[in-house]
Length: 248
Image (tube, rainbow, N blue to C red; front, side, top):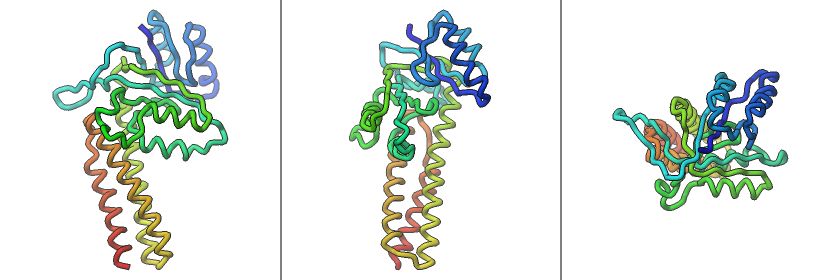
């Protein structure tokens, strides 16, 4: 059985630099900054070393796993995942990568390490969103290094709720940003700023909202996460600006 572990780097520099040495001493192989391949017989020792760093243990499986839910609709397993880890060239602006990530229904494991659902087309039949292969191709297109590991499942399921909470926060952060931009546009309309520029910004926020809605719908189908209230707030914000602009 092939096992992997990904962890959160320590804030303390001495600990951050010491962890790789300790993992190497245990025979682990580094695949990315915080993503390591480990021997099954050394799992407990590795997890002990990383106990303060929110370790996520993963394993390769042959068969495709579906998400599993408890009676209260709480998810217990995410199903089979595709892990994409990358290193982008320094000259590439992070905003360029963030822009494509916003169109990718994935789970951030750590910085530059994302987990995608293995059967992306199951919830995105028209392929309107970014899947693991498309994201990897994007990284290759900007001359970055990328590694892909398919058919992976999370072993220590106690980490799932934390990952889902971080995913919720990402969606809600995007919603808040859209609402904030719409409020600014309302102010610009009232001040009599250039209507053409306002319409351009409004069109951009409409596209952002539609993308967010598609991503949230994917999460709902995959993970049963409900973003209806969050989406409604951003919808009303965009609609309000639209109505004000059209009255001018």
